[in-house]
Length: 99
Image (cartoon, rainbow, N blue to C red; front, side, top):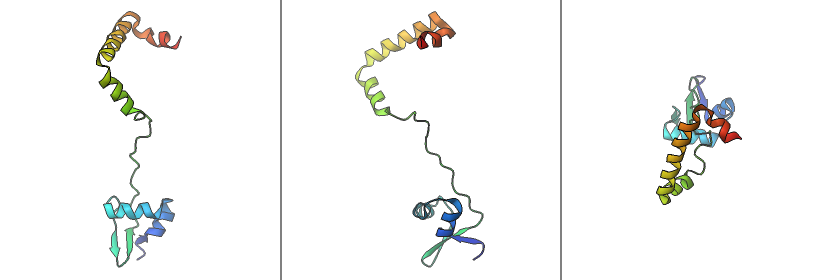
């Protein structure tokens, strides 16, 4: 039993919530076995990496999709304007936008 953690021990070791660890064991995200009523986790088991998007780029995505869908002619005109401005100002476009 010294080669294994219980869920509580593993939670203390990783600093994570025991309930989340149990859910991960059930889903197979963390390898472990059920011994009677308790889960045992091998000591060499690594906690899975957090792969959530943290950049904030996903915020308001529904609104952007709705604007694009509801106003196709506006989006086309804005795209053409962007291309023309890019051809006129080239690399200096950042200075134009900032001032």
